[in-house]
Image (cartoon, rainbow, N blue to C red; front, top):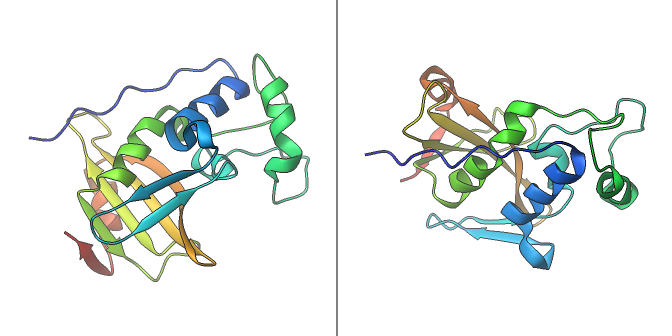
Length: 166
């Protein structure tokens, strides 16, 4: 039997959303690590917030840097100011963490642009029963690239390349 999907997160603004990300992925150390039984060791830093919720400020030069944005993010009590985000990705951050920590499947797919591995986890939920998380290699670390909810057909489309787990 598939597990229930973790609860959706609720937030009124960018500060609260970032604090959820910090709680879920970084903890008090400001740095997160997840070890997968297939041998992957994933490192998570504060700037992965930008990718995991598709966070942007359209009028600023890219890439956004946490060193420049964090104080503004934390001082924005309500709303998002001029920032944008993908609400579907944001509300499923708990599911993304669950997918990284305990994927049902991992596929190595070299056709992806910024990632190499596709993590897939199925939950007892509708209409989005799956969470799909993309993981890439940056220098000597594996890091999360993005995560999003999906339906069965979305998971099926991501099952490409070589299945490496289980």
